[in-house]
Image (tube, rainbow over all chains, first blue to last red; front, side):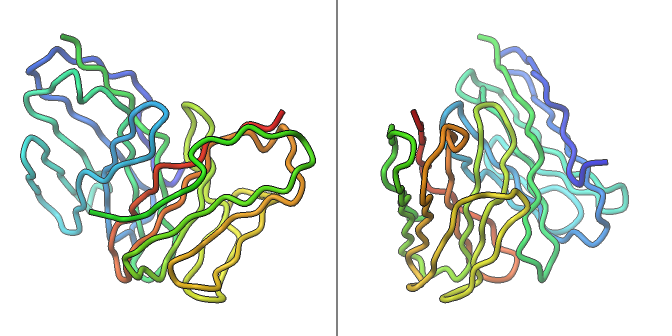
Length: 111
Length: 112
């Protein structure tokens, strides 16, 4: 079992819809969680950080963390074609150097 | 906004050449990382550094080496490039604690 798992997709949603991206992790000691967006051929760009259970909103993005169930999700409201990219989930255990990245979910927003 | 710079952005070079990929950051971050990523594939950690004179190998075996003589500078060197080294190399840095990593724009390396 991989330490961080994401559905590779592609996840296709129509423009204006809500895109829901999910990530599960195996290590209960994980403390910090991040979502990155990566356009094809580009480097990952940080979208959200979340550290405690519950929801965190930033513009059209909402990150949701449930440590008991060991999952973190990202919701994108009012999806735009420019949101089409691969979304990487990353997890860090406090006090360690290691950031475990998932393989990413490819999102396609259809105009 | 993170300020982390990688040069060159693209490099096409012949087999057997010595290559140094540069990575610099202006944020005073102690932690720096090198990842390798093939198109459409996952990130693989190849080196990281806690601070000056501290470097460790990552999860993916790599023939590259790194150095950290100054906080802001974390170059990666390939002594003798081979076609199998063709990939994208991404440098990242972060502040202490549980802060996120910030990535440079990457170097796309092609070995002929």
